[in-house]
Length: 226
Image (cartoon, rainbow, N blue to C red; front, side):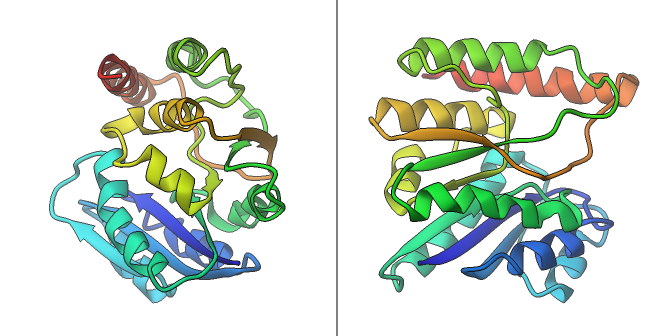
């Protein structure tokens, strides 16, 4: 089974090359696609130099829109594959992206249609949990009681059939929660599991607060459309 990795990225010039190289080293990965979501730094050039297929949006339009642009390339590749899995990763994982390989094992074994990575707890306090709680309650309500430990995790793997069920991707930061709900409503097997992956978490400063406020509003908006 071949694996296609799709990575949305915005201003990740410092980490995207390491993320691409680590993702490409995962056994079975044949293509890494990066969608540069209107970055103002060298994300595009760094990802391309690292060996990724890079698509670019002129303006920053959010994670969901970036994934939908990448979806076109993924779908085109899947037409020529007899058996494949799709992995979604965040652009700031760096070398730790190799830990996402664990997401593939249940997919390859036929034990799950979608796997979701539970990341190690951060070393310091970050957010206040409001966004995660909002997403968790919605998944429980609309996903037949599923108790999500990582409702906002962007580290996922899935079968092509699951990809079809959860797309087009919801807008903005609402993409993960809606993805989980759509998979569950389609009767697909969703499995969460711990993975040894690290990413940059926003703190409790003004920048972190602004990020989480935007995240909360986008998640709530996406969920309201269910």
